[in-house]
Image 1 (cartoon, rainbow, N blue to C red):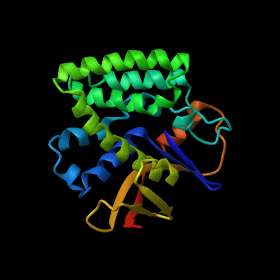
Image 2: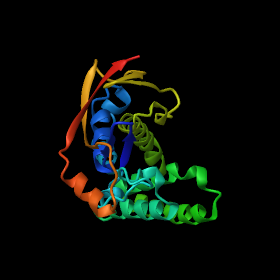
Image 3: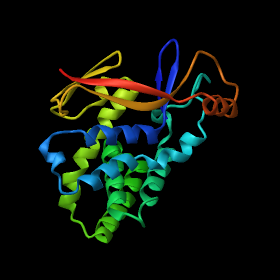
Image 4: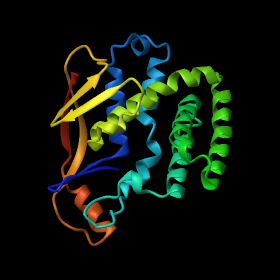
Length: 234
């Protein structure tokens, strides 16, 4: 769950909705490198499914430390995140090993900063071997994977920045994002013109929940909202 907190509310976006939003963004890019990409549809599907390992966690959310909303994904332990990433890779391994290899590459990229830690070193070694197996099963090359992963990285970071309300989440060299109320100013500008996108969220007002079950009921009975954001050039 991606949780955006303000004094008045907590906005909850599931990882699945964040991933779909990322794919929606990338699909409307008019940059020729992706608009004419030979594996465009495969990349877009991988972007839409890249956080599938979080489905189970988001369906049974845990409370944050003060009990005011769900635990943000960044607060999950290393062990929990590793299991989530393993699940996310294996879910599509049989159906689409190239998609699974891209998900594994995404996890390896995100965990790079912790690679010197013993807990992460073992995980990364095993995941690297699994990625290579999946790539071989897909009969694709490491060069192909290296060419496609940056699109996943970009779409993921842009969607996360907007969902979390944190422009600095777009930490891709050469890209800049300024967030205002319901507006995102982006450079370089990849769309045909100013474009409105929507993503789904559940919003809880102030209050405290005494149990994870109570939080789950509150989220389940809160109507989805379609959050609108207008992308404009900087």
